[in-house]
Image 1 (cartoon, rainbow, N blue to C red):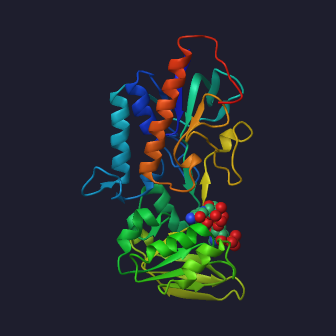
Image 2: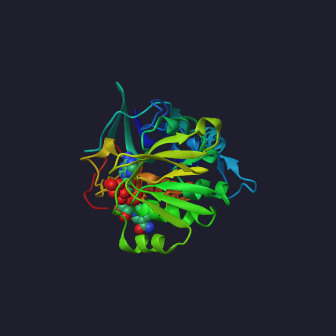
Image 3: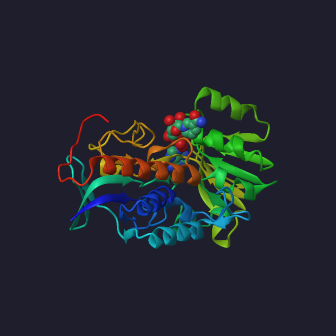
Length: 331
Ligand code: NAP
């Protein structure tokens, strides 16, 4: 059997693509990434399943819990007839249509594919971070998303780890909420662009702590952070820093390993797209964080999922009910 459309991934981008595709009668098959949950694999629902309160997704006056939002999206796509395989894709062959998608030994064929595999925040690797990516303690003290969780730290002293543009951006943004932001970086020079560095240097609420690695966080298991142990990366000396929140801003990793060598990626591994959602391969669309390192919001992911489904529908409609599947090199 050849599916008209397979959607890989089940964050806001994947679910929105499924919603539009199912309502357009494309009978989408979604492979939701639902096993292998852990630091690298977020499981079904993606990054929102490891956050708590989501207050910036329109339509929820009083906010909604991230996992609840994703459960609701899932129910909505099931209602319109999306078929969901609760597993991870292990291999794809996009060299010709119909495309091949493997889940272990099971092989699926598709005329069109929408990639919505998202991105994962990088973590330092401390045991105290584990409860965050395992079960959603976003508001409890450790977070990897300032836009999502900054609001919970009004008037508090917090730390941001990292020395790149993300860390500068998050630190500056967090000064809107926090009374003080310590920017903790493992070296004494920043990787961030000059303009972002200057913005952070100029901000009176930001204090830089150089040559420092976070060794321990006290103690997010109690659903709060009271401080961190820092290790000087030059002298080796340890010191305690009282804090009420810690933001890890050391980058994101797009989940594109499956597509390396088959689709064009940028230098950071994100899928390159044009016309918003078209990848380098005719018939393969990409939406959400896997192709967006700039906005990375649930609502922008959902918007691009909608675009991918509409473009997929137009492609299939234009092709009609044929067995001859073309793969032009330009589109
Ligand atoms: P990045 O440039 O790779 O920087 C990551 C930072 O985290 C580096 O300073 C790195 O330290 C530090 N780091 C990495 N692993 C660490 C660890 N285990 N423990 C402690 N520190 C660690 O990542 P990014 O800041 O997310 O930026 C990614 C890309 O997006 C860049 O091209 C950036 O320009 C772009 N971006 C642009 C904007 C903007 O223009 N508004 C905003 C965000 C991101 P070292 O420096 O020692 O390696």
